Image (cartoon, rainbow, N blue to C red; front, side, top):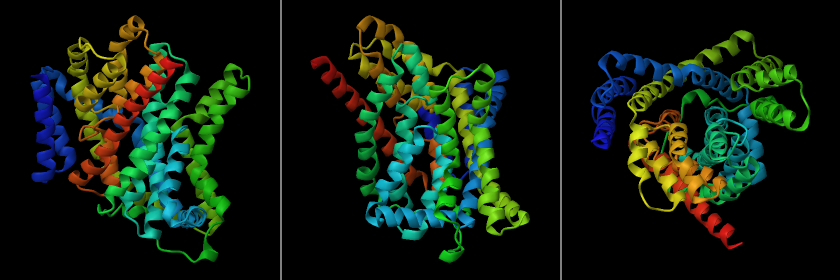
Length: 440
């Protein structure tokens, strides 16, 4: 009955938005309240769950999305994006630009949280799209596949790092196995799958489309790359410093503060304000207008993501994830497949990859201890399962849809299928790795 209620509410949400043309944020609120009531949350607690879901989702994300949009707008308007796309096209050629974006997504995705990497790289992606005329989805899916895999498979991302701790796995081995499995997974879900998406047309957010600027008025290549990728550089440095240098508690606190995603985005924006704005002959008034326009353009994205947060919280508070896990735990199958399946079902029902991964881990810990399965591979199996079938109850689904300005149908056939390929290929990689390790 629980699964029937969840799938019914998800179907209603899709109908309200696609057939009824109802504003997505309002549709989310209505369905969240209905789902909570039908799943047994007391009426007195429903509004609190919705508000908590919206608050938790937007608490950090609103800052990251707004600062990322501002940085992206400045990178576009200053000509830095045009310069970067020139360099990428000259280096890789238009024929191999997909592979260039995939490699960029993988390198950036290792240190950056998914949402930060998304809002940072999407403006650069759109600049390549505008220059080449290639479909945004065709170019973008390889990059987003790389970001998604690093988010779900590789420490130090929150879910994999927490799973390593819960299963008692080895961080270094998990990372090594994860990279070995991630590379073919990204290629399959990225450039290979994207070949089927050339006919999907989209008109990305206009805030990242700037008028072409004569080459002599563009910022230098070094300035453009450093200003646009400063968040990556700062995160890499703040991650590496504690590993290679002994720090006292004060220095650790300072490094942790500087390495926080919000601090990183704010510092990067301030630097770019000077390096791409003031130093490039633009007035502070003009730069501020860029920033205001950027926030206006992503306001709808924020509301839709907030709505997804409300639905997620209602499903979490109802205890659905634990109930599903208990139902599946008794299945007599390979523990690696069982962990993947539990995470996958919770992911489909709840929407959050992190919630799916951590809930599945809590259920699978005793199974890992009793079965003797490799805990490093269990981390990767659960991580892969937590990415499957991203749809309307996942904030990532809506960020992709709104930024790329796609219909729900095209979002499902591109984003949702890509995430599912990542999950299935990840499981296949885990099972192959398990067989090789047992044979060795």
